[in-house]
Image 1: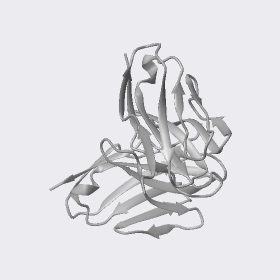
Image 2: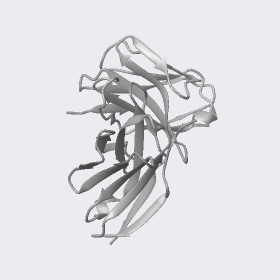
Image 3: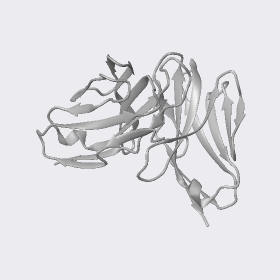
Length: 111
Length: 114
């Protein structure tokens, strides 16, 4: 079946660097995508979303890029801080269907 | 604003016991859902509800029951606990199922079945 996946299970960066977390999706009919952050012992926390009629969306220190041609989603975090250390999930949704979650990438920020 | 509240936070059960995981939201959201999270498996949907009185099965419904008598509450029942149900359980809600809106999650119930 179709599923959302991630290229790398772990990512380690230095404090102050920019982070890029990648996500590949296989359902070309998906039209809504979400990034979540999950800290240890907590539930997933919404970061940013994007619809398929956009290819870029910016938030506070975060940017999501969507490349529908290669079915790729990425989350860019500017000036990564120790508080950004967490597991990051992407999720996809086809219209009127349920969200499908990826397995997550663990981001570690080194001081 | 409490958001999504799950109780208990931790629970240990013996095989064959039953229990109810509670979930409540104070955002007047119509859509609520239950997920389980296992290492390397991501979040898998157990049951969901698009509104009071309406429930449906997700990806992994076996061994679990739900009901939705009010908009605020969506309890998950384990009828006869099995070791395979050891997991972290998350409840989530969003305003409407059919709109593109993110789900808000509780902080989870960590359940161990011995």
